[in-house]
Image 1 (spheres, rainbow, N blue to C red):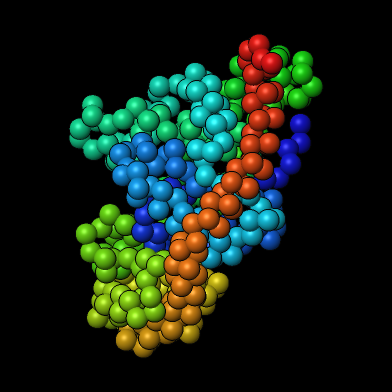
Image 2: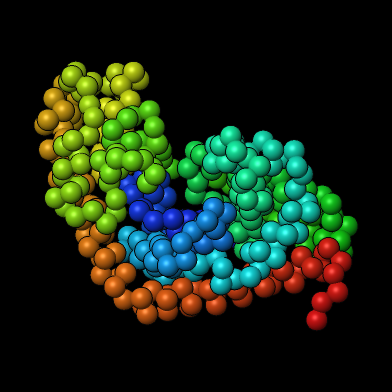
Length: 344
């Protein structure tokens, strides 16, 4: 059957949203709402796969919501909600626990990275959360997911789960008039430059909130002076900027800063190098400061204002959750029928 195009994605409320989150995800969310129907989720169930301080989790859920809104996502035209308010996510995840295979989860590299050497003490949720991610997407029968490079493996798992469910219950699906497939195989949307933003202190490492140095990242809540200071202190090398992209291959810090400029300015790296090729980093950083402050400064100020109005944020989430649940409940009714459960 033909599936209605729909975009789904989520952001974990783990605090300190930074430039990498903005360029790698939220900025793309904003752009996609002009061409697609979109559902954007604060994935708080994913956050608790590692222990969270309850008070901080509440603040972080509201901060991510504020970031969505401050960046330009329209909560009236699209859906913004937090995952835990729609129980169908967890309900479908259990069914997917029974569809997915252990071998599939054993191949997930992010669990190995996050659990580290002491995997026996990792939560079951951390191991199985790719199945919940599949449920997040497929409970809305979403067709497209904007993802970073590090999430492509999990989206492939979502496709595998959808395909196996469609195959396992093929006769039941067809008998209920859904055609040959109930779930779509969601496609990744990886767009534009700087889909993977690196640390300002080490171009070989991804920008991360867990980095000990605050100068490794630009936080979305940083004020203009802090943004300028961090850009000026960003690690570079002694050579002038090249005129062509090939000249960036062995220069990770230069490549990262050029990618950031390109993404903030909605151009590609080649365009940036045409303008700044042969220039010293001091001149380029001055232009990057001006651009970063112009783009990010208003977002940080608006986020701070919105976080101070918890009632408004909670109202947006409640409205979005109600609208999301209508869609999710219809999916779960059909899934229960397909699987063979007796329901009211």
